[in-house]
Image 1 (cartoon, protein in one colour):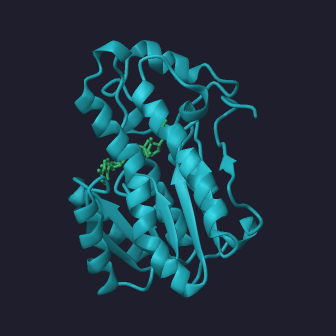
Image 2: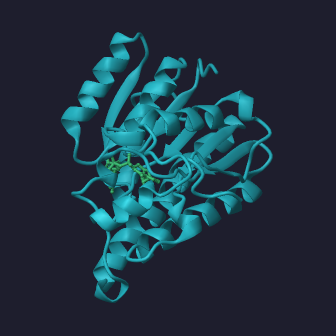
Image 3: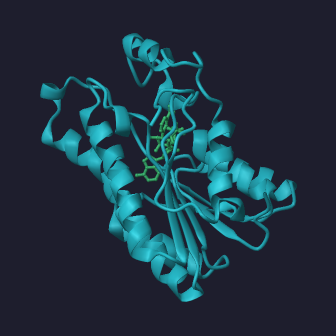
Amino acid sequence: MRLDGRTVLITGAATGIGRATALAMARAGACVVINHLAHSEQAQTLAEEIHQAGANAWCVQADVSQASSVDQMMVQLANTCPPVDTLVHNAGIIQEKPFLENTEADWDRMLSIDLKSGYLMARAVLPGMLSQGQGNLIFMASDLGILGRARFAPYCAAKAGVIGLAKSLALEFAPHIRVNAIAPGPVATAMLSPDSMSAQTLALELDIPQRRFADPSEIAATALFLASDHSRFYTGQVLGPNGGSVMP
Ligand SMILES: NC(=O)c1ccc[n+]([C@@H]2O[C@H](COP(=O)([O-])OP(=O)(O)OC[C@H]3O[C@@H](n4cnc5c(N)ncnc54)[C@H](O)[C@@H]3O)[C@@H](O)[C@H]2O)c1
């Protein structure tokens, strides 16, 4: 699956699934834009790894939940790299909390980072894609956006929203722009660690037919497929690399 001549912007790309996706896209020949929030060092190391492999990569810091930050990022990119034709909107956070303990601020933070950011990123890249006459948006949802989970209501609501956003954009911007979502099952990243969630939740996450967490590269492989022409008849779809956690 080759992506030569393509420019892929990946949000939250310094770590986890985003990092694996950046590497997969670069290995397939794409120019890669590594958006990061806090992980400047990891982003630089990733860019160097990609350069050493013979591909182009740029790092750009931005908070994707803030319109002004996203707009500044796009201005910066306009002066540094070829026009973005593929977006992998992957940045996100998770928080485990009993529903009644959530504050309004918890709710707003989750919805801003995990859902509103999708609107801001789509709004930022679509005009350029429309003027190129083609484009590809890939949104990172979650199996929890389909299943729901106790103590994760804001996260699940945001990820369900991401799926609705992807389907609506697929309808509105067809036929030249494709829009799909990925709803991974459990993936071995910082998000799925004892620092981020309880032992009870981690045990639930492992309670799937394949009885293991995915490697981030297994989710990157789905993103690569969606970015490539091999998926050219896919739009408005939710792909589930999930070890069997969801069976539609
Ligand atoms: N790990 C899993 O089990 C799992 C399962 C389903 C879906 N996902 C989704 O996959 C995506 C990647 O998560 P991950 O597992 O690689 O975890 P991760 O924590 O390694 O990656 C998330 C990245 O998003 C970045 N980020 C957070 N807020 C940001 C902001 N406002 N602006 C820019 N970047 C921001 C973080 O700095 C981090 O690099 C997330 O959207 C997550 O919800 C993960």
